[in-house]
Length: 280
Image (tube, one colour):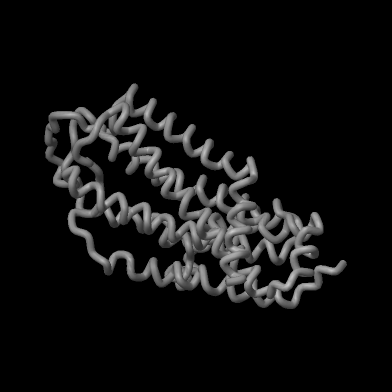
């Protein structure tokens, strides 16, 4: 019961801050720019689609739909922008309160440290999920308003894939669901950094730095053996949702990685938070 009370209070604190909604505003601006670009210049390869066998295939009809917007916005945003926005908010959940002295007041109440830390972890995950799905819902809404519905034409490892509108909906749900879980990994890492560092900016920066560092290691021959354990290996795994056929095996390794990246930082953070001296 105390956990639920703490969770409600943590969510209230997050969503009462004006800075929290800056992230939603930034995503809305990016979606607007994407829609403007698609409206002015059309979809990539709108005049002709080149088949892998080097033959050209003409495609008629409208290549740009609401699903085009929601699909094409994912790659740049989930690889760079959303991780930064999640880390900015979650990175201050402990560090900012410790710096201001609020954390000391919290721990004077009859609430266990584990319950408080778990509530912060859950609220960080909720924020990451809501931010991810806001992007999808807003992109689809604006896309429908400007371009209307229709089929989704995209590329995958299978080549050119055309998904009917009735099939595009569940595929979008799967893609954004997997992306949201991956953003929970960033939230967990940011919360761990927030426990370690007293400065919320340092905590957020440390969490975001995991992505470029992981990407560098992934592209260095000496560390190829680490590739299955690096977060950047799976950051774009949601793209498998747009394959010609949907297979759970394509997401199995990524979901295992998500579980590890969420659980391990949580356990380490809980231990540090439990033993941390907040009286000074």
